[in-house]
Length: 276
Image (cartoon, rainbow, N blue to C red; front, side, top):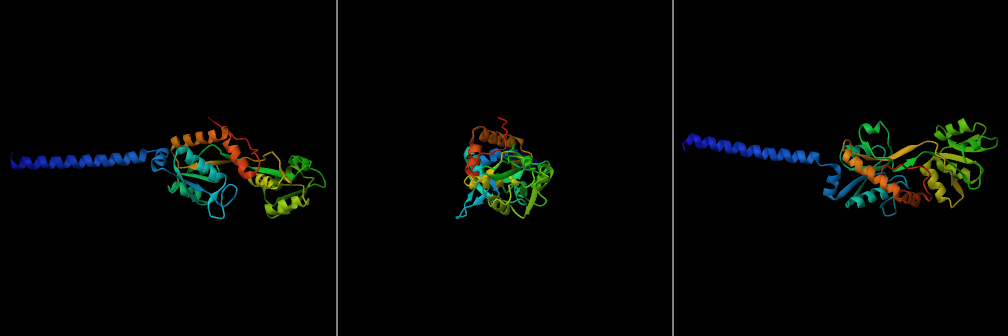
């Protein structure tokens, strides 16, 4: 074989080797991109969950600094179902979405209301908890709804500029409004019989009534409805489908109800929807 032919063959072999290597690297990159979130979590053996640990019983830390609460239990249940370990990152209202979009966490359990604005940047599961404004009164009181408060001499404890104030003014205009600065003061006035009812977020109402040893009652009607959903990275609908199925099974099996009762001291009053 002539020298020129040998050089040509060698050059072609080098080009083939480089092309083959490049194709393998490209295929590897493509495989990495197309590997779904669910499979990636299973392969890694770890579920990285963003959880808000600043508001018991949704989420908090015990005396030893260990996470606890409703959202922690839900995240742990998901990890157990997947057969992986749970790794918790503490997030709050400002950091929970960036933690997802940056890839720092795989999923977020952070008392987050699903809405259309947030859905522009992340995906949401079906609700695993529903919150809203509820009414609380003393045990044995004749007041069951906001309309029952519409009488002279009845006092309602609310904070200014809240939905509770709006409800009292609209449906109980004959009642006297007693303004307070926080929910702790509302509860204290109710126990002292200085007001007849208070309005606040259902998670606070249910927890306070559940811890009152029967002295206070959380009335069942929910005056607003805020769907609390699990946040996920945008665009992986296979993962969304799996998480929806997981939430649905937790509800239909009774596990969600048991877990809520465990942390709030009473059964949830907001109806939960299952799709499986």
